[in-house]
Length: 63
Image (cartoon, rainbow, N blue to C red; front, side, top):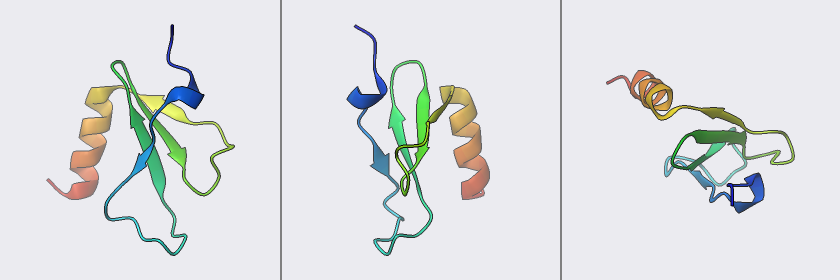
């Protein structure tokens, strides 16, 4: 059975606020990282490969 979007386990960064700030949620599976807008989960998520996600995280963290 494949991984349907409804089956994904989503999480937000521990740096996310609780005041409804702009934020994304991610769900990590074996072959990809799914990313979606936490304020509007009805919008489609997009996926990136693990290597691309790691490069993005390094870029935004300044490392």
